[in-house]
Length: 470
Image (cartoon, rainbow, N blue to C red; front, side, top):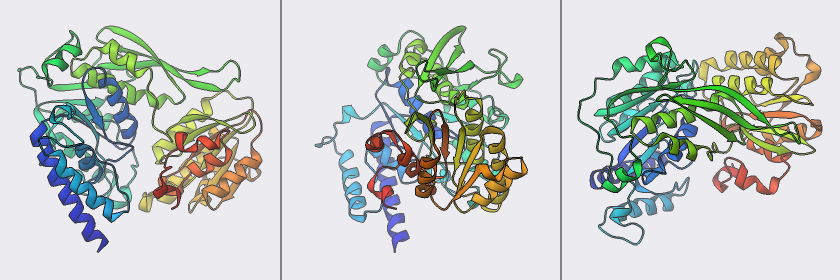
């Protein structure tokens, strides 16, 4: 009964979303990939807000539920059937010429949509009714999340490639040139027509600035040498010189800085409150979208100076007793764990480096091997390991095989126990990376050891009642 109700609600919301797109005709940027979708979506939103009215998915609502909800401007009802019925009714109001919530003239000119894949056929459901002006591909990780539900990692990539077929004939393809599999998608994009792209209203064109341009084709971003072109490993929007910025008062990191190069110009940027060289890519992708659409790049970069990735994505939080927490508790995949550990290894610290790792979910038959590999990386990146969950022993096995002594390893059954263990262990100057898949609720570990637990709702991921009491 529950699945039948869900299918009916999805059909109704999708039908309403189709009508809304037909009525208001917004331009659409869609973001997909197996790593960094939500952060990229938020960065693109920040880059576009100075120029046009824009709406994005809230949180990571990127599913067959989430995308229609975003188009309709509605919130998720989670597990409440009555609220889902209310959403369907409110969706009808959006179609009226005038209602208490929305006037036609206030519907956003642009939608920035994260489009995810949970199981085969997810993106295919959008293909016939979600026409895209811009498609952004972030990265195809060697072992993606949700591979459990597909025949192979390549099958996940093929599902995401459907976004290419959703591009309008004059659409722009924005690709990560650092990822060979993504970079090769340029060969699947047909040449654009010569007609210029009309970006919304005359008012939005006026606000855009003087750097207009023809629409269509491919633009690349990455950390490869500028100007060589994607075929030679280069990119059109390039980031380089990443460096961690430290707080002189505490010696802890406070963010990262790098330089963006594009169109023959250089733009320094500092992103505070987060660390990780891999976080360059979402910002570079956002600048690439601005370049592709002819928006004023200096203004877009200036707006991105204030950008903060969503909660649970390599956020720097003050821990108890003069310690630092790297909160990466939103989700976990092999590539994301690898990037987090690499960042931890590269940080300066007067104390110990501690990796607190929960299960990486939805890896299916690949689960055990991937956890062993991640455990081996811990031995090279941290001095202490707290392993949590069903695959904790695989983390331990990998760490011990790579040379970590058992006296530096602790096992915990769940995230709350991990928080208590970490609280007992932490000493002044220590840095702890906390990461795990959503179902592990590693944000509970963070809450146990953060210096300001009263700010958990503000600073941590999954603070809604529907998540906190699961």
